[in-house]
Length: 281
Length: 320
Image 1 (spheres, each protein chain N blue to C red):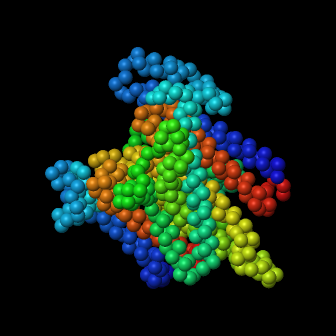
Image 2 (spheres, each protein chain N blue to C red; image 1 turned 120 degrees about the horizontal axis):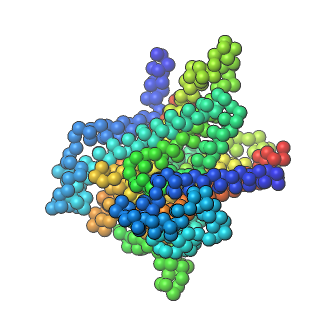
């Protein structure tokens, strides 16, 4: 219990963690609030009030179809969070399982897992999304799967490297001498000891997933209408750049603040959770 | 060295072979019927059969795979469904835009990143360092396509110095030329480079800081070498290993980045080609372009491995 209190005491004094945490909480709040309330229905088309400047009624103005920008941004946070959670979840579950397996069994299984993850790096998320989009059609699920697949080798490599270090420790040797099996040792000793590394990587992967989703949605390969997404808002705004340049600014700012928040929080967590991993300052 | 090279070459070839199998499997076997995907739900059985025969889909999968890969190796490719042109011709034409763009972007990235990274390391914990680190933290969070849009907003909409996109071509008889072509690629290259440089600059900074703590740096300074000479002669060479690793990863990112940024600036490159091919359901083009890009990524990783060995003899496992 006192360790937890100690963590929060140090966390409050860590500038990256505080700023990043605040921005991340802001994102989560935006998504949660938008589930229950939006200033305007985000998909409601209202041509007479199109391309309005920011006002008391429309905080950030309206787009070419008269839709309220602030409402779309709020609801767009949902897409970003859903993609982030699911894509990181796929990578985390499959990657940790493969990495832990490789580390527990060693030998040809480890070799196979490592070669497979080397190989997977040849397919950036965007290429997978293009292939899947060409076959099953573009959509939110296509994007999530493509980004998730890309995350698997990232977590598999990290898990294996961190787990191998744990397997070399004396307490694991003691556990083996006491007759514990590889499966039990992995659950009781290896995973709890590498959890911190995985949490830090998950935060960074979340940020990367949001950037990738934005790019896919911008290209029309991600979230589909009428569900608002920041990437597609930028695509639509590009057509109105000469009449309403501000439309192309808001969604981008939302992406930058979100990604910046997650990256800063990841940096902060790295320092707070694992002093050995802390980068030189 | 030669044993190491041979081993790496064998892995390179094997990776390409497996990658081609995977691309083939995903694009030609998974959906069941390629002709259906291309023609859509409303296609008549006759038109389906005709297209299947034209694409050679009535042949067994193994034969089609060998015909495809064999054709790629000989430089003979299938006809694009939408353009009725061999994909190799389409790709070669589009590469004239994509390759110069990627080269410009990478050159700008390296220039910016090395300058900022070494500067920050040399000013460690002083104002310059803190400033570079803060700016690069924001740079990492910026999506390259949004930075591209911001550049268009500033230079095309506000200042009206350039057009908002498009490419005049390299040939003067078409109204283009070398200078107009390079100018058209400048903003796209900058938008790709700035974001990548932010990552690489941080990497360079910490690699240089690490190398500066080594004993050989103290030795070099003790024998009378100036701070600057030590930095350029000893520190940078030793800091290059992690930096080159990240550069290799970034080149792969750049491949993906060009696809997006070409679409922002409406440049007729590979990215635009593959994107339109997805929209047109031109699977032959999608397959060949994806294969080319995957081959490019694998080749870059191969080159990075070989570069390691050239820079640091300790990393040549074959000679051990």
